[in-house]
Length: 179
Image (cartoon, rainbow, N blue to C red; front, side):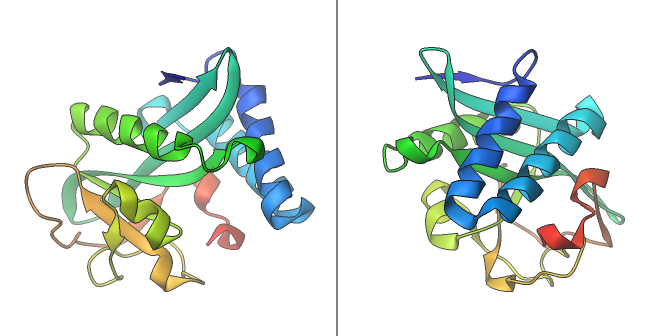
């Protein structure tokens, strides 16, 4: 398995992976929503505000993780949110997602990102260091429909201290249906 830190030239394949994976697990409507989200992230997010990681096996994209910038009005720290992430349905349970996330978090750490946040299953993401947080510690940019899924971690030697101020996300994540 190989990891890539760019989606140059493979954007359509990345979008297809997310749409197919979410369609298989959550239905056609969710697959379309997440496919559109990834398309909008790739086409409308400034490069400095976006990281796209893929896992590939013999040239086939089998996993993807997209991180985009969150800003907190009164906090200088660099914060990125993982949203979304997918592993090809026929490759679940093989450790691909965990390996991809470890790689991605290492790259973010090396690039000076201070905090990583995601909105998902705490049991799954806890395997790579994400811990439950609440909106007192890190405000979400939009109302959360599943507050127990709001999780994060410090990527520095410092513990995760509360992020200060109002939170804003990239334009592609401003859809309440995602939250």
